[in-house]
Image (cartoon, rainbow, N blue to C red; front, side, top):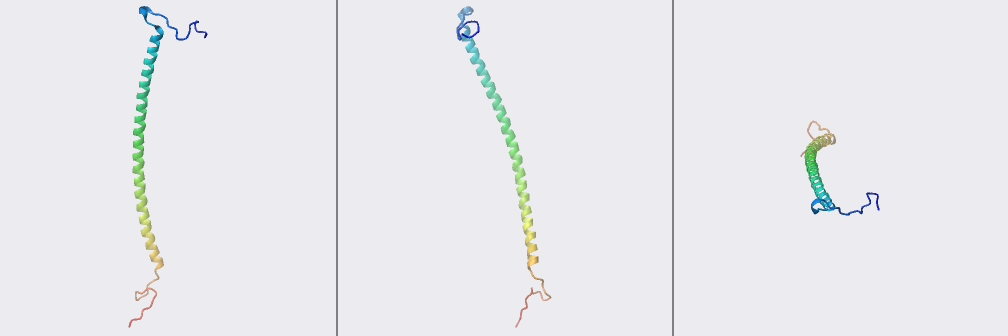
Length: 109
């Protein structure tokens, strides 16, 4: 036996009106558990909604930043390719002579 007054665990003691203390304690325990579960469920739902809203805000911000970065990168790449191709053409082409022919002599007729 445990040192708790010498009673067996779960033993019922009668109260006024023929009610049983253990049964009321069980009912109270069940009601408290239900209330706690409902409170916890509400709390977790609130946290879940808050986290979902935060994730939506962050993902939108990241999407806008990513789209902005992608657009900026594509513009930069296009500008780079344009100027690079101009530079390559300028350096690859031999200088023109007075006749407008590039390094070759043509014989007409």
